[in-house]
Image (cartoon, rainbow, N blue to C red; front, side):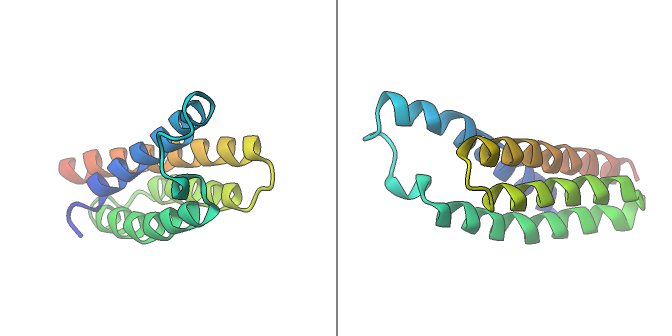
Length: 118
């Protein structure tokens, strides 16, 4: 998939906005956002999209640049996101998810740049 990196970065940004902005909406105006965004099923569904899109994008770029560091960075990020979904504590869940998403976004950004160079 040629545009998997771009899609993955967009999804990562959407996830960061969700993780960082949603709590402000909850405190300030709970009626502003749909209930499903706070549901655990939403996080699992987003993870189910992130894993294959990331695998496609990183895999496509890896065939060009052959740098395992990006594969490792993306895998670390996805692992942190999975661990975040499994947490009982909201703070720990959010922290793991934000760091994981940042790793995945960085891996896709570098993958996109290195793929264009290669």
